Image (cartoon, rainbow, N blue to C red):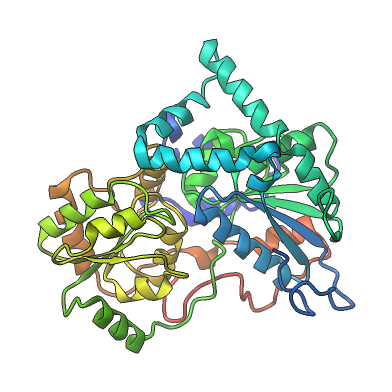
Length: 439
């Protein structure tokens, strides 16, 4: 892991006083700074079985990317496994007047049309002085205030006008920074009387992720933990990522998929750009073909324009939306990503080599930098470097290790937040470690 000590990192389980990064090792400078009711015991939507003592957790996602939703689903699953109940809501729906949906459309349009503006906006939100600082504070205030009423209603059991109400939440877990900002302000101002945790889904940490008032920040990457500490985040804990329970690799399924892709015996590079197929995936495909080493299989997600553009290109297979990527990852020889999202974790879980390339401006680049610092993914900067990285990836034999099994589990943090919760003794289904893949 790039010379880092996992033993040192394990001290991040429950730090009551933020550790100064210099006492451990220096994190990669982040962002230019200096160095749905979940199924319960009785089934979907039914009351919990008698004797449940784990409490109710409100999980707040943000559908500005499928990775946040996937993380929220796994958090909810972990809560249920610990004997609790979970409700998942989307912060997009909690903004008044459709503002959340408008922001989502704007975000995806930015990434599709002029992605560099996203990097500039994220940089603006880090400003603290001058006119830019005033604008940044105004934007942050809006993000904190606008969804507040909806969040309070959800914590209480349901929004006004709902046909039924749920149990009052005993704790809240956020998987998106917009939700974390609003919840932190409510907590800091005494308007929210239940603990709030932020589940850091990214390998790097922008300032939006850290909100005063939030009780704890759960990191699944070493660099994210260190960057959160450097930003003064409260209660930073490094845990094993929450992932779907992994099964053994299915050799027959791999062969069937590769036959469907018509790749023959060629090594396969699975190319992913998130649920929207965002970023310069056409450039990535061109450069991969230029290596002469792999057959690119591109997961276009909801981007039908990209799929149409790739249709008929010799030596390329273009896929549409997939409900899950585990089988596709197993059938590939390496994965090339551009955002550092949930697929990154699944790739590491499945033991496949991972490369970052032509990354999305802003969070994609910072996540790639953090993944490289942890030794989890190379980040080639041009076509010649890509060819060398692909060559090294194809030469890898055996499953690579992650070190996740040595970390505390999210269930441990949950049990501390909700003392009546009981982590499963066998660690499943929280660890998400595949049979036959070392941790």
